Amino acid sequence: MINLYKYPRLYLNAEVKENAKILLNLEQTHYLKNVLRKNTEDVIRIFNGKNGEWLASITAISKKSCEISVSKQIRKQPTAPIKFDLFFSPIKKQRMDILIEKAVELDVSGLYPVITNRTENRKLNENRMNAQIIEAAEQCERLDLPVLHDTQKLTDILADKNTPLYVCLERNSGANPISSYSYKNGAAFLIGAEGGFDKGEIELLSTAKQVTAISLGDNILRAESAAIACLSYALLSI
Image 1: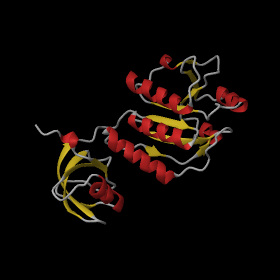
Image 2 (image 1 turned 60 degrees about the vertical axis):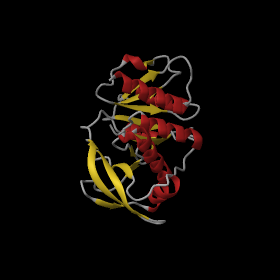
Image 3 (image 1 turned 60 degrees about the horizontal axis):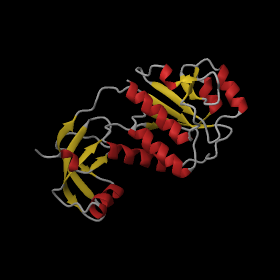
Image 4 (image 1 turned 180 degrees about the vertical axis):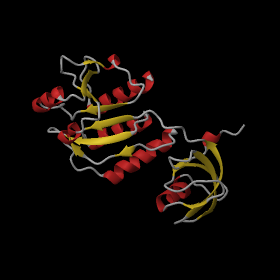
C-alpha cells in the first residue's frame, strides 16, 4: 500500500479538478525544484481549501516555472467545521509566529487582530502572516485555511453585540474556569496584550453583555500560551 502522506503538500489558490493543468507560482517552483529537488513525473499533494486534497504529478519544471497535472482526489472536503475564532492583541514577532502556527494547527477558523491600549505590535505584515497561515496548513494536513481579518480596535469589536466572546481575564475574581462552558457549537476567544488589559478595558469588558470572562488557571500565561490553551480545550471538548 502506497503511503500518500510521503508526498509534499502545497496549497494552491486555483481551481482543482481531475486532469487540470496548473502552473505554480515562482515561490512554489523554487520550493519544489531547489529545496525538495523534485523533477518531472514526481508526485505531490495539493489542496485549495474548497475541493479536498488531490494527487498531482509534475509535467514540466524549470528554474522559473512548474506545471503540474492533477490526477485524482484522495480526500474530500469536509462539511462546514465548527468555528473557533481567535481575537488577539498582536505581540512581538517571534511569539506571534508561534501564536499563528499553533492556532492554525488547532483548527482556528478566523484570526482577528485587536488593538488594545497595551498592544505593542501595531504594524502588521499581513502578507507575511498569510504566508505563515498557508505554511502551517500545509504542514498540519488541514484542508482549509483560516481567514486573517482586518485589524480592529477593541471598542469596535465590542460594538458588535452579536458576537459572544470568551475573554481571558485571569485577574478577574469573577471569571469561571474555561471548563465551565460548552464549545460544541463553536466559540470566539479574546486574548489580551502582553501585560493584559488595562483597568479601563477590564471595566469595559466586564459590563459588555456579549462577554463571558474565563480563567485558564492560577498561573498567568503569556498571550500565545493563552491562545493555545483556549483553542486546545475547545477543540478537545467537542
